[in-house]
Length: 130
Image 1 (cartoon, rainbow, N blue to C red):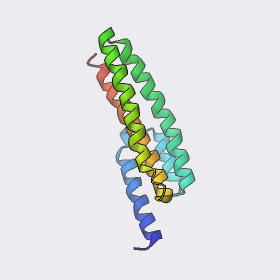
Image 2 (image 1 turned 90 degrees about the vertical axis):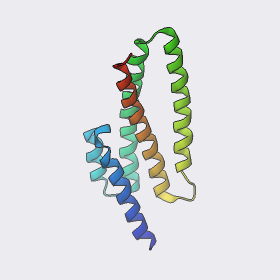
Image 3 (image 1 turned 180 degrees about the vertical axis):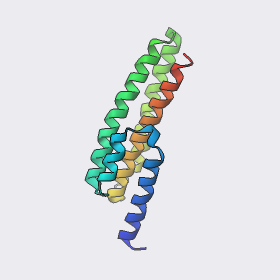
């Protein structure tokens, strides 16, 4: 398989994974990715912008949830969140293979975005149980 063919196939797979999770992300992100034309810098900008949106969503959900908890449960959530952040950062750093080229940087950024969005949704869900 030629390098350009492999890159196109990998980009198609990444695009599929992004759009398969549309319910996690903003409409603005989907439009941005569609308009990126598969250009790495454009895609990274889209992912970075959406990561900021999802990080804000996560922080809001965390603050709402922690305000609903007893002191001991608050302590447990803080500890869990610190460990989750360490895991997310370590896990997504692994995707940033220095020999992986442009796709490695996109995969690493997509990893951080996806994990952050899923954690935000998880914390929102936990609010109903608090």
